[in-house]
Amino acid sequence: MKKKLLVIYDLDLEYGNRLLSYFMKKGEALFEAMLITNCKSLEEIDRDIALLLLDESLQDLKLGEKVKKVLYLSEHETNAAYINRYQSADIILKNVLKALETLPDMPCNGFLRGEIIGVYSPVGGSGKTLLAKELAREIKMKGGKVYYFDFGLVPEIMGERRADFYYDLHEKIHITEDAWKNYFSEEEGVFRMASSVYNTELWTMAPEDIEFFLEQIHMRNEEAYYIFDIGFFNAAIVKLLEGCDRWLLPKIYRGERLDKIEHVKELIRFQGREALLDKLREVSHPQEILSMLRGGKDSDS
Image (tube, rainbow, N blue to C red; front, side):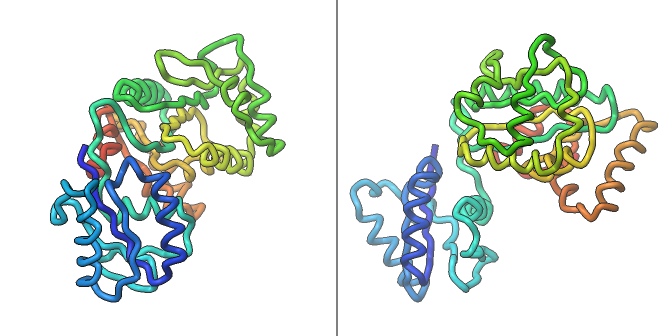
């Protein structure tokens, strides 16, 4: 895998160096080397890069191939790569990847980053569960780590009850590592949330419960994929979809059912949540989304 050289330009070196330390832990798989500089011109930055490349460990790097853009993290803007320095380091790292307009080339043995993915359709029998399962299986086969959540109304695995999971969310109790492991069973390498005989807990989940749950996922700081197979729609599920990086909608070929999809879209617009529709991607096969996860251009078709 060819990694890139990331150069961060920041007039405030104290802030920049803290970012560099953070990136060295989080981004070591993405970038070959990183440089923080308070140089006043691009020419000076070029010289700093040249000096950096003199290091023996970086001698194989070719400046023209590795440097995609210079990112400004101060009150400057260039090449449409402005980044708000007052954001959290996690958000900045995500924006850096976006500004670079690239994801690292995926090695043959797996994915390097994770996402929260919701698979939902208002149409029964649309294939959302099949799509969610196949996507989880495909990511696992490529070496990724996958957690699969069955948020349907009818449990698939009978005899297991995980009311404690919903209780912890409702009471805002931090989910410990032992408890987290207890909630899942591993099937073909995919960590599946054990289903409940009674899924009434799903109906009573509030948006605040989902918000706390998403915080727990982010706190784990895992490079894993969290796939939600969603079988119903309420305020809590809307909050979940808002927290997802992508909302996958299985393509429907029966015209008479399209009105249900449009009804949900109109409901979302009525609630002033248009940004949620920006995450919506209609797909018919897991390979379509796999190309997106690898950094291919998103497509609604």
